[in-house]
Image (tube, rainbow, N blue to C red; front, side, top):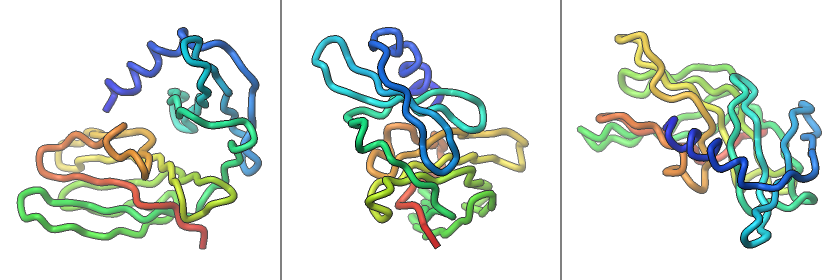
Length: 163
């Protein structure tokens, strides 16, 4: 989980600087970047919690209009029993997945497609051991890109909710 973020941060110097963009709802900033090798574009998104950065590929400046959702739909999996649990969670709320606690910090989606791609900031804790197992962005279309690493439980984002 932290490895993906570390690798992305190490790759950042390889990108040329570009245009600074701002999301319309909360004013957080991302930065359009261009790879020097193939000229493809991506966006650096900064976490609202700890300032860590994630690179989202293939985003054009006119497509970077993100809206914040009121919550998210998640799925939880108990790998031992095979039980899949659908979860609806509001921003700031905490729900249980087995022995774990999942808190939604924020959920963003493309302004023109609320049911499409979703980016959710999740914090997953094990209250019995008092430690954080995951703290970062999960992407609905690429759940393995930045995933929870737990022996028994799995959590992934389905979409953001708007009402």
